[in-house]
Image (cartoon, rainbow, N blue to C red; front, side, top):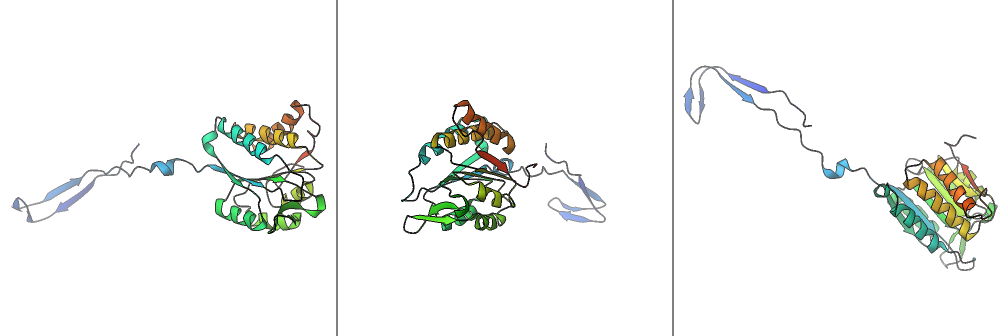
Length: 235
């Protein structure tokens, strides 16, 4: 409903000269209320929730079926009842520079890394020569501290990534990592269950549980491998 503004009255005393000539006496002009400007359509539509998918499979590492995983995520979001609320951004063969720039450029709410992890040695990103560049958990924690205002969830879908998840969890509300090796199919199922639930309007904790259950429903080992940590997670 348009905002109602009060009428404005202007009173003139004495002769007033206008188009009709000079009028003697007082004249009152009532200015009708003007409707408030309508909000633009763009302002009425909330910005989409951005999911940044980061893939890294350096040359000397075991090939992963990351294309199948991202396809499963796309399908989960495209069929979701809240599909218009999400935007999936993909970055492949990600280097340390790509990671920082993608976070700066897109300001995502969810950051999803798929690739290899080596426990205390770090997550494996692509180096300048295409070989692996390892980034330790503490360095990732310091990076995500700079983006804590917009990043709410980090999902590390990589083997032995719990060490990095624990470090990042000191800065971010919800962080998911794997406490041991996880197979390709189990990793895909976790992603599918997680984004099915997120697209249906569930919160991050519930979406995590759906991801674990998706592994279990497939009768795959490792449904207890994903771990949920973070500043907003009750311990």
